[in-house]
Image (cartoon, rainbow, N blue to C red; front, side, top):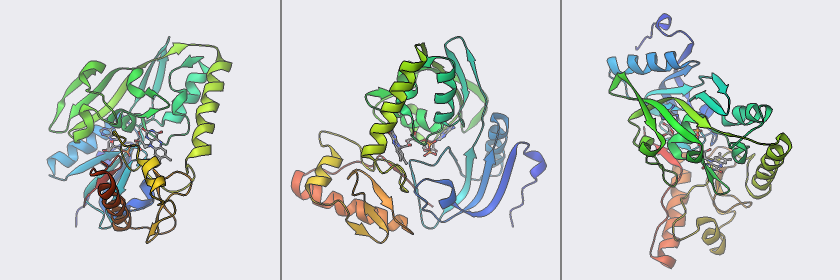
Length: 297
Ligand SMILES: Cc1cc2nc3c(=O)[nH]c(=O)nc-3n(C[C@H](O)[C@H](O)[C@H](O)COP(=O)(O)OP(=O)(O)OC[C@H]3O[C@@H](n4cnc5c(N)ncnc54)[C@H](O)[C@@H]3O)c2cc1C
């Protein structure tokens, strides 16, 4: 049996064979062979280094809000990043990758700083937001990124500072998307504004999401990327809202979301994705690309 000497990992918890559904917003997934919860950047790097040394494949996650874990689980280590330090210097924000976006939205508002409020209510860590190039209401996280501090998984000795223009930010895409990087910290540049105006914009963004999207259901956000086709509009026009396979259902509130109504399996979600894409192909001779990330065993 694999045993980890916990003393090696200050600021972290190790759990063996644990349910991944407890670590993602879809509430789907089998067991991870190893799971670490890390509470600081140094422990994040220590655990990554440990996995490298012991040849254990690993995946760092934040809030797990864009992920569909396999029913079989994950044959390696899932590292849940809860590093939580951040500091403001004038209008700059230096933040650990494990910090929840909503924490720094509130903190920024207290400092009269604008730039993050359009992302209110989205379950995201800073790391996940940068990897996926988080976007909402015509704002992208890259608008406010100055640089990202990261390491390549195969070289933890070399700290890399990637300026925004080297991050290849695109629509739900970035240089970090290939799973080769460990993002540790990010510098955001924000703008001073009137507190009441920032709060108003924050509330407006949050309300728009609450009204139009199933924010309190189990999901991983929009399932498909937009292209020349708008997935939610087309799925709605095909009359698919409410269509269910197992406990995976196309949301009746927003056709771009698949929700887990009780005990959905990853195979149910993937079957529903195929079902949608086959109908879309028949009609439009194109298929939608996934925005959610399926994490195989
Ligand atoms: C209800 C709901 C609403 C949503 N609304 C939106 C929306 O409006 N706009 C939008 O863009 N998305 C939205 N999403 C999707 C999701 O919230 C975003 O993609 C988010 O940025 C993911 O962040 P996370 O911390 O959960 O990342 P995770 O899902 O945990 O991980 C995402 C990817 O990033 C990698 N990763 C995470 N942290 C690190 C790190 N430190 N270093 C290296 N790699 C890392 C992971 O390995 C994985 O590949 C929504 C999701 C839900 C459930």
